[in-house]
Each structure stands twice: as C-alpha cells, then as structure tokens.
Length: 415
Image (tube, rainbow, N blue to C red; front, side, top):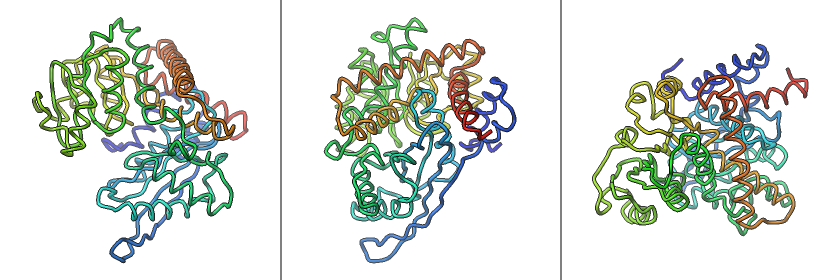
C-alpha cells in the first residue's frame, strides 16, 4: 500500500470492518471498488480567447441504498484516487446516518483561484454537459465541495435544466436559497459535528464550557466550528490556522473577527494579540478538543503519539491514517471519524432534496432539530458497535455503514 494513498487507506479500513462483520469474499470485493466511473475532457474558452482542456471525473461508488450523493471539487491537485476515496466515504457517510442515498464524488483538475467568474461558469456548464445523462434527483446528486459554492451549483442546475428542458431543483444541492436551497446548509457540516461532539463529551465526562479547542483549517467547516463551539458550548478556541499560517491566543479567539482579518489580508497570520504556530504544531497542542478541518492525511504514525487532545473531531475528510488511529486508540483519545463527524453536510443536503421534492421549504429550527436527531442517533449506534467489537470509533462506524450497504446489496440480489 502506498503510504498515504487515500483510496488504499479507505480500502484497508473497509477490509477491517468486513472481517469483523464476517462478510463473504464476494461482498468484500464488490465493496472495494466503485460501481462506475466517468472520466472526461472539458474544453473551455478562456477570457483571452484560447481554449484550455480540463480533466474531470465523477465516481459513483455504490447506489444500493439510493441515488449516489456527493460533492464536486475544483482543485489543481485533484486525482482519481482521491475522488474514489471520497466517493467511498460518502457511501459510508450516508449509510451511517441512515439516509436513503448512496455515495459518489466528482472533481475537476483546475486552479479556481486563477480563474475569472466567467471562466468558472463556462467550466461548470461544460462539466454538466458531459454528465447531464447521469445526474438527476433519482440517480446522482452533486453538491459543493472544495472551491465550489452555491453560485457554481446554480450554474450547474441551470445547464442541466436547459438540457433536460424541465425544472428539477433536486438534481443538485447546496444551491442558493432563492433557487431551492435549504436553510441551515451553510454551517451544516460544522453544526452536525457539534452534536456529535456534545455526545462524545458526555461519554468522556468533559464539560465543554471549560474545554480548550484547536482547529486546523479555517475554511467553511473550520470557521463555523470555531464560531459554533463557542456559541453553543462556551468552549475557548485557542488556535486556528489556514493553509499558510496559524495563530495562538490563550485567552481565546473570536471566529468572526479572525474571519474578517483573513478576508482583508488573505491569511489569519498577524491577527492582533496572537503568536504564530505551524499547521503541524496545531495538531500537537495541549488542548481538550482537536478539530482537523482542512485536508487528508495530516495525523499519521509520525505525529499521532504527540497528539494531546482528549477528543479529535474530524471535520476534514480522511485526516487520519490507519496507523495513527491505532496509536491514538491505545492512548485513550476518542477520535470521532470523518464520515460520522462531518455527515451534517450531506444530511442537510438530503433535507434539501426532500424539501425540493415536496416543493415545501422547512424553517431553520426544523432543519436543526432533525439534524440533531440524525447525528445523535448515529453517534450512539457507532459507539455501541465500537464497544461491542472493542474497536475504535472509525471501525465501529464502518461496521454500522458497511452492514447497511451489504444488506441492501444482498436483498437486491447483487451478491
């Protein structure tokens, strides 16, 4: 296995769960690979008149439990193996929170930071033109992910509806509210994580109002995590970082003030009253709660023994390698795995689909209450399963999710 190949890591984690569940080899083999993949070339006319060809992907990992669901990433370092891994994790994510969807993921190799809004719109529409035959509310539903946003979803929906010649807002989620988006979607990933954190703190006997928190990553998930952990629990956020720099303040950081500073300067660095810290240093800080909210494979066998937090809440996808999981489990650190901890986003995306199909929007309180119910139930199912098998929470989550997907495949007669 390559040291940090995301898809090979996902397969290794799956194999452990399959063995614990005593599933047959046919089910294992069927679950280790995507059901189907799409690779495409996307010619786009740039602002200077030249045509640039971008490489795009869409992976439909498994749809035994329902239509595939998963975001679209625009990133210069996108690879098919990362997309495969994320599609697999989406499959387990929808299953672990028990919503009737499968898992998928998409990506385009591009640098959106160097592209104009016009170029991004043309790229977005080109992507949909290639995949309009496979997307749809009952087949495969995309959503925003890294460097994509509600505006890009609006362009994609418009292109899809233009091609299909009918309205179908449920074919995509994460849309602007005025085009059928759901209240509560913007902070759903972080808010869902807060509900899981609340239950985990009870299990560990922690009073979150007295806890210190460090957050690696200050994008959407990291910013809202910093904001909500203070608003909901009264926790003290002592450190945050973005892709280039980090800051520490023992008295606590105000998420909104830090975001305003970052929006003005392009970085959290230099925020008044703070001292600098590296991305790697944040992971090893002496805090009660560590929240990786950036990229994959940041906690490895090389630094896991230096993690001092009592709870690790994974809002990023795949931030911890299997070897690091084992180290932290032996240390008694409660790791709340990504496809449980950050499942709030896909859960509210599912709520968005339901509202679209009913043509009836919910209020924000209803969204929050139903999200809380889903995340709380998922946490306790995973915790009970982990204790039953005497394994860490990630393997417990895999056991819950894989058993549900396997049951659907067996009932359909696929395996």
